[in-house]
Length: 75
Image (tube, rainbow, N blue to C red; front, side):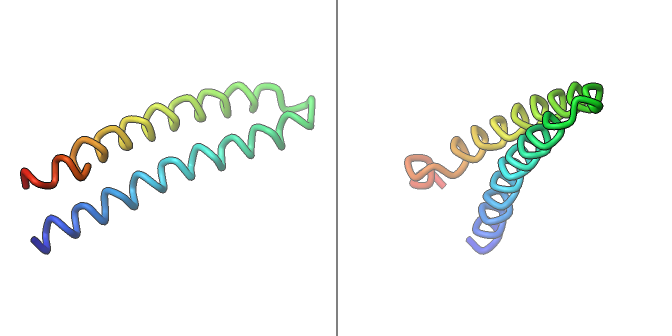
């Protein structure tokens, strides 16, 4: 029970941090867009946002499937 609780807590923290990373990258993109001299950086930032968003969605989906209340009865 304690190990499962720790795993759930760590998974939730990872899920939240992944989504926060997407938010921070989007803020960076907004700041970079204010300066036309950094268009190349914008492309890399957009790619990083897309990748971070995909990973965050994957973590959120995994977390939902692993720790959703409907599934906890089975554990």
